[in-house]
Amino acid sequence: MTELTNSTREIVAKLWNLCHVLRDDGVTYQDYVTELTYLLFLKMMEETGRDNLIPEGYRWYDLTKLEGEHQLTHYRRMLLDLGDPENRLVASLQVKAIFVDAQSSLRKPANLKALTNAIDRLDWFSAREEGLGNLYEGLLEKNAAEKKSGAGQYFTPRPLIDSIVRLMKPQPGETIQDPAAGTGGFLVAADRYIKDKTDDLYKLTETQQHFQRTQAYVGLELVPDTHKLCLMNLMLHGIESGVECGDTLSPDGQNLFTADLIMTNPPFGTKKGGGRPSRPDFSITADTSNKQLAFLEHIIRALRPGARAAVVVPDNVLFEDNVGRKLRTQLMDWCNLRAILRLPAGIFYAQGVKTNVLFFSRSTSEREKTVEVWFYDMRANMPTFGRTRSLTPEDFVDFENCYRTVFEQGTPNDLLGKEDRFRCFDRQSISARNDNLDISWLRDENSNFEDQLTEPDEIANAIAQHLRDALDEISALTEEVEPLNA
Image (cartoon, rainbow, N blue to C red; front, side, top):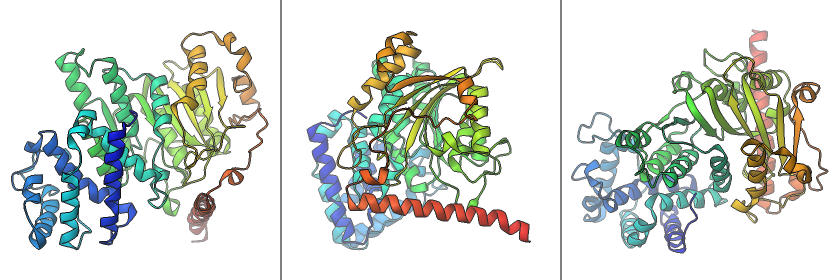
């Protein structure tokens, strides 16, 4: 994410302060950004001169000129009509998708008027100059950082996303996929990287520009409200291509186009009720409720020959036996697993899990398998990350330099002095470990994650997640045992 300027941060802070108005009307933190998205979308369409996407009578001006109960009633009707799939007045499919099933939690006309007035008073000139997409991403980041919103578990830190994008180097003309799109962070960052390299696409032909805007980015997002936030984020960054609302572990995912590049942070844990993937093309993970393993099989299958991927996974993907081991073997047989970045604890603070990034490419022939894997330990003896110590771009500089030295410059000997954090293990030694990739060699003085948490709510979140994981496992086991007793 582009670093926010002071003026943009000030606008984000003012937008977030509007949550107090919404809270007075019974709107929770979880619903706050979704509720505000509807109003911001109408205002931003006006500010960007794209009011033509909204039918007359439903635009920002039409709403703000009204007063009292008439304004609130009209606003509720607007939400219904704009999201009506049968409404021929709305030509834009993206607009319909943003407003589908939309309804307002506002009950007091005075609060709606307070919101529209406050939004109108913002410094929209500065916001336009610096990019409305950056403003909206800032709001999403603020929501993720707010401990009461609970959104942190769904939000991938932007410094991590940007580091992955810099190493993956997305190119014009490539199909880029995120099968767990969230609010669209990876796709937006890839688009920004390509635009920076092509003078905002002006170095490309008209056909190439059209592809970048309308076909380059694809993905799925399961949660409807998050999907709406994603669509608005993409739209404000000039991306018209499609992230659909759907389940990657169902035939929806099988219908995604194969990709040249996949960057994603799939959901962790097990499917509710011990549910299994419903993908007929899955083999190894067809009978597991472990979502991260199933997503990894999707990614392996969705890559074209020679295509590459960077995937955030929790530690258990590296060491889990049975299905986990079979999937790791498939990964190293079908792909070239280049590197594993062991991320520090506390990044996804709401879940309290330890994570890694897998960097790999799909093989172009059966003989092209993983020969060796490089590991970078960014976890042992690192600062405690969380709300009091956020990730920064500087935290990834050494890893990026090491990665480029091996995979771009081809001079691993230059790393001899850095073997404390960056080491190579050949396939033979990994096979001797039963393809267990949970490899560490540094003594970690801060090995107990719970000991690193300093905020009471961080500790509570970590404990709560352990309990949720245990209940999910019990539920999954129950689903397996019941048919046997039938």
